[in-house]
Picture 1: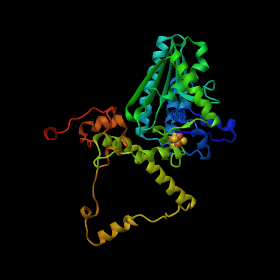
Picture 2: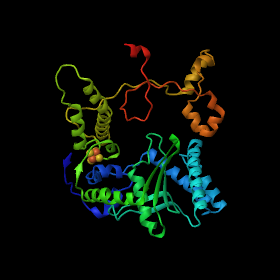
Picture 3: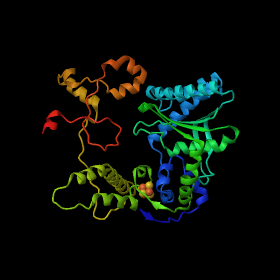
Length: 395
Ligand code: SF4
């Protein structure tokens, strides 16, 4: 952990983009990461583009459901969206799962209160706690004594929990700031819907608790981040930091893990083995980030790393013209059995093509799951513990 001040240029202009709700878990843990990251340009991944498309598609369905457009307008727009490169049955199914959940919640709000506030893709302002910051809540519902924030997560890599999730809390805070005075809100509900991982996660807070968190945790950290001050702190949150490959604090933290101060005797104790096991993932992820960064710099910017050079990896053989191969083999008298192999599409491909519902309907009874490879993980892992084999027990 280093006490450091990073000089930032042009604070006011950049701050609103930097102190985002989606980056909050990072800047709350490591405030100076905001200014340090400014030297790197924003890049968009294909996953982010896919996520944006899912939000746009769900917004279309929900706008139509809320009668914010005519049927003709809806059909025209839907037809256009179906031409999008990211549209397929699996995405459609995932969006429908989210839309079903959202409309159910909207109906609940309407049934509970005479004058519910139902908003989609609403800009919320949490600048009283985070300088110049705002965000967009996918769905905000205010009814009775409740304020609900619902967020669609399109990813299928890492499960996102709503529990103690600062992004969700900041959206709720913004909604409370924008509309709270109009309603007698007491309870906050925050839900993440991640349909592609069958994940729906909700957290609940009282308004007082949320405001206390905002005043005592968010405000001071946001002020430090805005000024480029505070302590660098490496951890899980580094995964989404733009400087993760070259950050000194992260490197030092990982090198500390790699140079554990082991005691004698010559064999590691059980506790030392566990210490290594619990650090391996973080170490490997850091090493991979450094490797990728150095390779990209060498390839894209001709960067010369002292004592290193670029070489070509082992290539694999492939046909230059598949039709010519078939013609040559057929002309030589070989039949189809020799030339072609028949194979089924993978489960993932078929599920994507058919959509989850149709896939389950047609093929669900033919899917079995092989037992996963046994792994040793920390006790806190949510997966149930399995027992070692009786033979191992006996030994
Ligand atoms: S890599 Fe981690 S420690 Fe370094 S600035 Fe980013 S969040 Fe902070």
